[in-house]
Image 1 (spheres, rainbow, N blue to C red):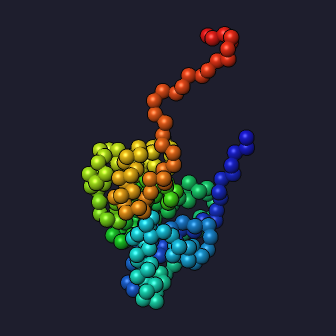
Image 2: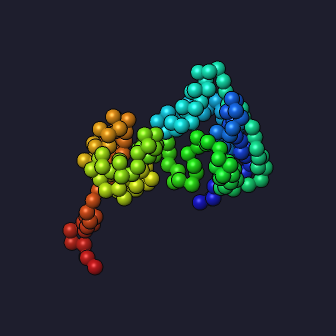
Image 3: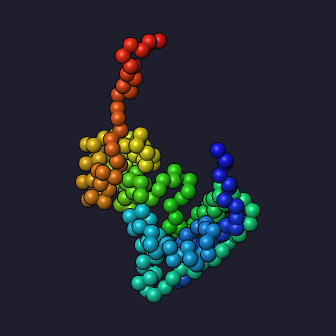
Length: 200
């Protein structure tokens, strides 16, 4: 089977500045035009990116848009290299005290529609710790940590009782059915041999 070709450049590391005080509020990476990528930011889900969407909505209501600035153009390198450069820019801005609205890439990345990612963002938007979430749904904090950072795969699905509690806890924003079928537990059934077949 042929290997997938790496995604070579050009890549653009860009920042979004607040037009009121020109502080850097977001660091991003794209292969598209950064201006086009900015327009896409407005369509990201509020539940998944609450800090960024709140900031953009406030600017939009005041008739303002972020200032887009390309800070690095990467002509040669694959996606892993480009993401590493983006992380370095994020770290540099955090070190300067920039009030970034990014979800930092050092956290495990899940699809934004994965229920575990939405549960994590839900908790962060309400300033809730894992212990707070655990107390609300009657689970142990380590288990909540694995759900919030490792979901999206059937092997990490919580049981039906906890799913129902999460649905109630989030007011239906995260539904029991979002995790798909429950994980099968217990030993795998033994293979059935045809009648008369020799067994080892």
